[in-house]
Length: 159
Image (cartoon, rainbow, N blue to C red; front, side, top):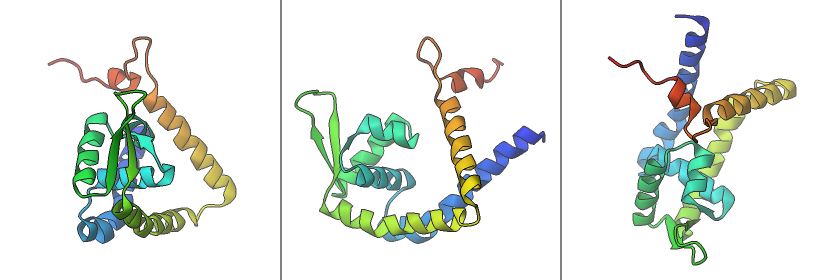
């Protein structure tokens, strides 16, 4: 495996390891999927947002956001209200139960972040933040037709 491919696989491993506290401590206890958790935490932090904004902020595709919102709504964790000024937009806010769950889960997210980043000094943390931002920008770049460059460049060759 080349250096870049190994780094990619190490990043995927890092992502999987970061999910362990969620799957071990939260998912079964609160009957919540990873995408639902991401949405709940994002809506809780913002107070009110729209589905497409949640998709942009989390990197979760719009269809998965829609499914997660529907599940959160059925479990009385999120309220969905159509925007009267823009009928295509739906505002998302946490219900009382959603807010309660957010308050329970937020400290858990802080614990994970503290554990992971406490081993880095201020400069290392700033450099990492810069690298993550640059990589995310690269993954989100679009071409002149509005297509995701990442998906276009990484498209498999035809059989």
